[in-house]
Image (cartoon, rainbow, N blue to C red; front, side, top):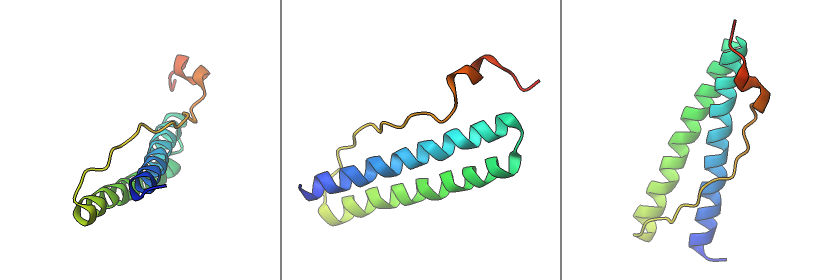
Length: 87
């Protein structure tokens, strides 16, 4: 496993965490639990910042772009919820 593969795997894992917190923030907003929505929104922002730091570190230390793969993060929002509204 090369350095590129290791950093790519870390980046994908971080991106999956970012998407997870984004989905949960939306989900908690929908069901009216704003405190949890705010907490997950905060996690989303912190993890986004860490993700950008990782990409900056790789670029500045290895002097190349990291080839990013798309994350495979399932949504924690049940499919059946999309047909409802908050009323």
